[in-house]
Image 1 (spheres, rainbow over the protein chains, first blue to last red):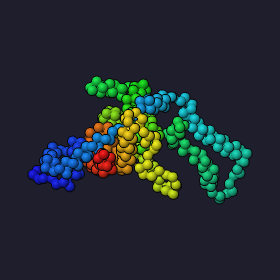
Image 2: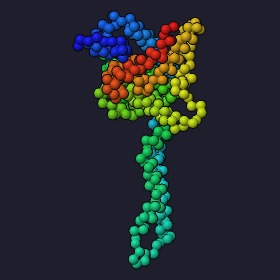
Image 3: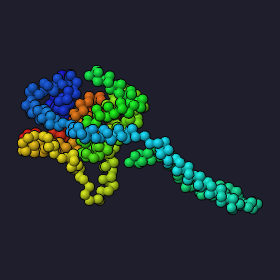
Image 4: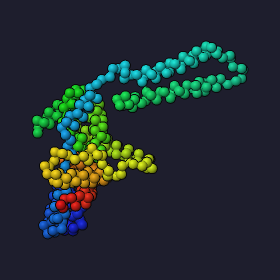
Length: 153
Length: 198
């Protein structure tokens, strides 16, 4: 590699040069340019000043300690299995209520045999529509994680 | 240093086995840095606390999936950085959806808690004010950076991670890390030039 860098090339490399992130060859080229260019040296110095002023905003020890305790409380507080499974029980209860309502309805309203020639398929469609709520509630089982998160809130 | 790494490995192994006390040591060890990072990433103290808490809880619950290929610190920062990015994107989306709402904070506006002066700094009021002015300028300059540049810069500069570590945390190439870092530093130099010339 036998080339010289110009100021416009250096500008994009100054930050990486500052952090020592350039390869040996590139770093050597930048160093060579800097030796003969006051403007780029000033830019490097300015970069150093700006970056030297930026530091982590470390929180007070008490703030960190309080937050750490909050995390540990969330981790260690174990809810009883009954509480954790409450949404499942709720969903099952809803399903049972609907099923028993259907069953009771059938007993009270025993349908007569369909007239000859009438399609029987309509019954299964009707049951599906009547049970849409049950199907909707089954989503609860898919969203257990979300429910658990909401409970923690 | 080797002792600390061994100690950390032991803590991580215990935490993977469900030992919450061992995980607690890791939480207390990394909390100050995690909170500092989240504050500078979000520019909001309250959001940062929520994000950091959630990230640690998620880390504990996901310890089983931690294979130890990277350090715990790198793995945890991946969770934390993703949580901060998700939070910022959600905020941007909400701003776009509810653009007509008055009083929404502008880009670069800081949470008052984050921007509150640190009373421990400087004994002379004028020196304290100058330092506070500088800090405020730094916070504003950081918040103005695109989120990816900000994350790269904070991980490389404040967390002193190597380019490879930053790439692993953010799931981008080392070349992309260098590119983001260079742009971030150029933007910060332009934003903060007048303060460092004083």
